Image (tube, rainbow, N blue to C red):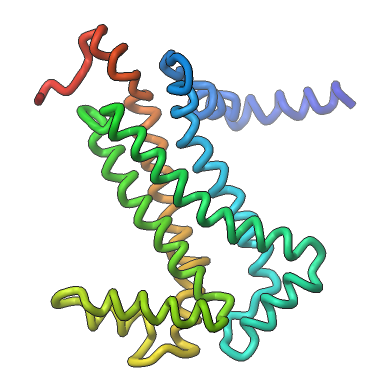
Length: 235
């Protein structure tokens, strides 16, 4: 059995170069750091792991969810009460969304306070900022999907706040609601954004972000970089 597995692995390695992909993404050089600082470099990978968990649990939930005002709430109850491990999967997805926002914010704080956003990594930083906005968008669009009173009125407040944006506010609010009032069109649009549009956008941005991280390498702690004479040549 081990010989067959080894043969299959060798076949895949020779034809796909998966070992090089693994070395590039997961076995790359991490700057030496001491104490708690070393753990700060794991925040990006932890965020990526939580995103994978969210994608898997979201796909499992979508198999039983019905995005219509008449059946959305009942389908969520069905998931929690009747589906095998449904309550556990729903809980993972629910709390994972909040945890992902926390990890993204902590990751960006680490980058900011350690100066890792400076030359030549400005593009990596800007893509990360957009990723933060997309992650918040995931939370906003997913909050409505249970279609209960709490989700309905919270989304009503959110869309009304968006409607106060100068010039484009009323148009944005109308697009989000699918009309002048919240209803079936609102739920359908939020569901489409949550499971189709935002995942496509976030996958593209993650690909660009990882490419830039691999291309420029991971920045060293400020003190170590200063000793080596690295920094922002523009000041």
